[in-house]
Length: 122
Image (cartoon, rainbow, N blue to C red; front, side):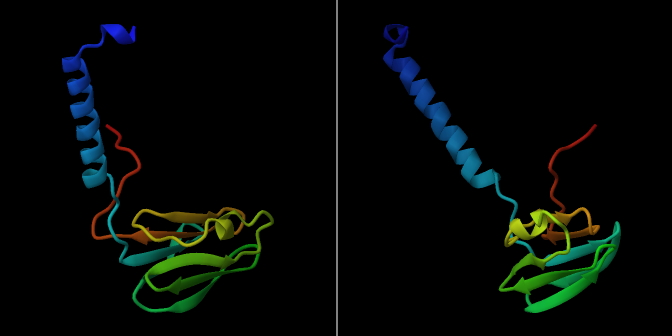
């Protein structure tokens, strides 16, 4: 099978791979985050700049979740939930990054200059 691939075929394959790598490097980025949006029970609790270092206590049905903003990043440091999934999410750095604490109904989302989409629906 590989003997059937000619030199011109290899050239087209290499150009195609280069083109895909170029598009990935230049178009597949979410951009820098500028704000953090904290929701409690589906409602907006706070929308804050990532420029200030601070700790925010967010009350929920199970207790208080602690959100930390530091050096342009945000994370959930403490959560009363059993599995600690949102704490394990770690530092959120890019626009569109999200940490969700489902049992406590708290979420943290980073926002950029433009709204990002996971998918588009028609």
